[in-house]
Image (cartoon, rainbow, N blue to C red; front, side, top):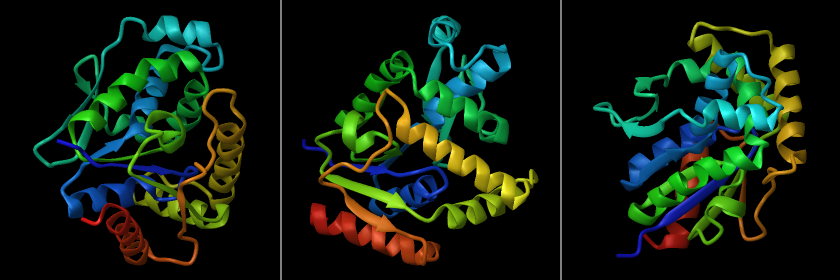
Length: 225
């Protein structure tokens, strides 16, 4: 059986995870949030007190851990670290920069690569991240580069943080998003960029439902499902 793979890439705060999750539910695909994998690594490094920019130290710190991606009774992706559900903890604001730093290391990316590809070989998947269409699934059936202006992404992120009970000032969130963009686009290993054959979906002027409809339209047109 030939499984369909959809690769969604884009900068931090573009709404990739929320939109990809809803689209996967609509199409009955498996949703894979690859950012959560790197956040789990980043969370472990943060809690361990290791310098996230020192690749050798990071690789030593993760050599004995067990990272698992599972799906709970709620149908949502859950991340397990050594058997403990850390799905909530990895979304702490402090973890974001750690996730970005560790994801720059080739050794960390290699550590997680086969897990991601195995899921695509065995399911219809919608997978989102920053190098899915360029590195992880270069032969994906559908590639989409999802983006929005930094200001729009910062406003959305502020609302998300407020809803989680961890509000942050807009200026601080915008600064962090711009810094993360710079880190992700200029890292040596698998930098964030649009795949040449990816469709661009800019949601700056779109609300969530409009963005979802546009995303589903693109996927259906390319897969004829």
